[in-house]
Length: 86
Image (cartoon, rainbow, N blue to C red; front, side, top):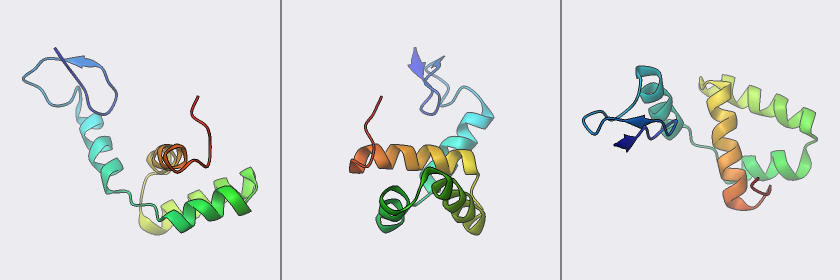
């Protein structure tokens, strides 16, 4: 057995993803590039309300899905030490 790289579900070895949506989400998530200065600005200088608005504006400007952008930002924020992992 193998695991889906996006959601982690168990899948057959012959498959790469468990579903078409997981495949699309995985490759869209890879395509999202968030500059470190943007992360610093939203985590150091913005309130949580301002942060949500900035993320939404950033996602709309680049044509990215907001939920995937938020997931990417959460991963990077943990990696760069702006927030603690759960």
